[in-house]
Each structure stands twice: as structure tokens, then as C-alpha cells.
Length: 114
Image (tube, rainbow, N blue to C red; front, side, top):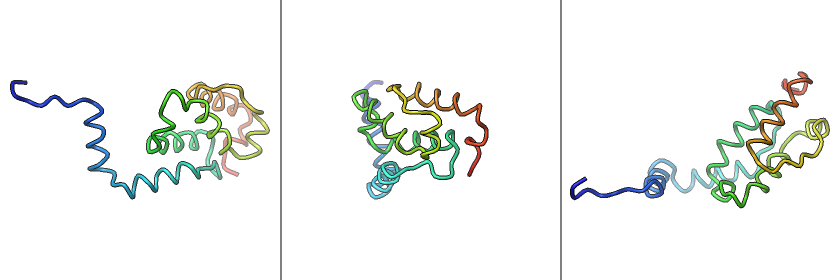
């Protein structure tokens, strides 16, 4: 508007993060993401947690990091899930997540908690 300040999306995001996510909280979330493993979560729960924590690690939210993001996701899966699915050649995270969810539908015991 007249005499108003134009705020870009990047400016808004930066100010939002500073105000609502102090550095120590962001750092803890980054570490939680880097150490994330499936554990007793279902693949769907693990994928949701993976995505929610990945926003705190800017590197994993770039087009250049898509390959690494897929590797990180797969490496956090339980060994029996990785064995059942096999190593995936998919290197687009949304496609990879959908593929794992689809393949996990037929062996119900893997979807449920151990």
C-alpha cells in the first residue's frame, strides 16, 4: 500500500522462525531429525515425523538435496522393512514415500507396531 512496506515470503519466514522457534529449539529439532529412526513407528508415522522435522534442516529442503533426503529416509527404516522393500532406486522424496506406503499395505504385520 501507500507508504507501506512490502514483505517477501522469505522475509516473513525468517521473522516467523526467529520469533516462534528460538535457535536452541531449532538446533534440537535439527539433531532430532538427523538422529531419527523408524523405531516402533509405522512407516506412515515415520514419514510424517520425518517430514515435520525436515523443515528444521534447510539443506534437506533444497532440490539439490532430494537424493540425500531419500537416502536419509531409507536409512532410518527398520532393517526388516528395508529388507522387505529392498533398496529403492527412487530419488524423489514424495514418490519414495508413496511407494513405501503402497508396498507396506500388503504385509499388514509390518505396518503395525512390533
